[in-house]
Image (cartoon, rainbow, N blue to C red; front, top):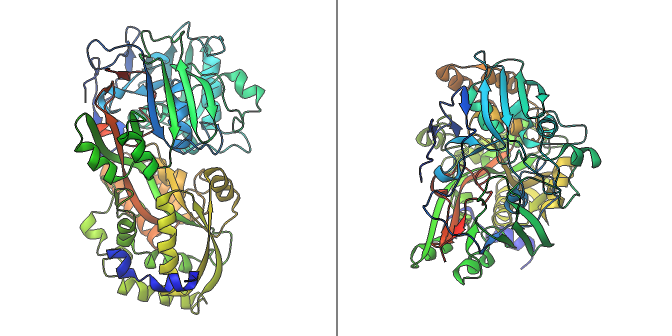
Length: 562
């Protein structure tokens, strides 16, 4: 059967068938926002010391982790994929961090032991620990922190950092003395927003000299000195990355482990599941629901799922015809049957239907209301009818041929691309050619506009729209791979960023959502949960209430009870 026959054989209906508590926590967390709440303006953590939540943790042993380990490059700040953070995060520390003992609900000291936030909300002062060493023996100073965040907040030309939009209000970062760093804002923002932005697991502190020596671009630098609990020992590309304990780590007695071995396996793949079920590894991340069910039924094993800070989507290159026409983009949005998209990957990953806003957040249109909207109804008839009318009005009533559809090489993306390819062909006579590539090629081609359509996933740090509205949909946003620019939307986003009244802010968010429905910046395919599986002897972690998998993965509190 050739490719055309295969597409013809796929019908829409056949596809449908086919906390441990932190002992010094002084403030809580609002799960709807993904932001730490009630952060004190002044906090003296000079006596604070992080340790495992369990009493009498054991030292020693090597933790074996199964995780996607295929780096597109090596620059943590420029990345947005677990392929980087998964194996690399344990080599670094942050200025402040989320507490791994309560699933990241609380912000606690890290390289900064204390902070002072001015009453007007425009100056954030952090006091650094003294005597902290990078892996190359150099002492950490305020100049390293300043250089790190200067680069994140205002990336040099040619550098794209997904978290830069979080620091739009930051006008200046200063180092008044060797152990003091100040963030100065042009205008105040909510304290929890700024502190949560700083505490992102991606904002690892690197040496100023490292940045200077590499022209502020670390994409091709495989290992560079951090201050973290583990150091790189050996890396075998696309196979294994081995870490060893940092004997000079500042937060003794951490880490408890002698080392960590990260074994590469693609997300949701049979290889990943079999690695843990056979006992070859102790812990796996981003596995399939079947493996999680088997683990839960196996004595001595555990599994949990949690919401992921990611949108799964197809981007449409607005720089190319016919995708520069909002009528074509809306037509594609309407014929994408999102219920089928959830169904075709149900054996790979737990997904849910949603639009342009996190569906499990307070900002989202309620599910019952969303499912009455064209493009989200279980019966796609009306949506397809409107899509055909839009295509005809745009001059493409007879269809489109030869669109280049860039596919990231992961099982879910391959399945979705094939399903959407069939939907476009059957409903709008749009022909696409699938081009499956590894992460490095996918990210390079999307950034450079070398595609018509591209299926993949992007991350945000927070549930708050001021994060991802700017990063994903904003003009020039670091993850706006469609190169979308809607002036009315940009004006609304600017209002959303500064509005403090929640009710008024929700009204603005709803207006922005409807702009995207009619002029889609991307095609939302689904939103996900993530499954972790581990053996019960793996202690010192609490993944049960994570938002995303990026903020509590340093492994310094992990220990092996065997």
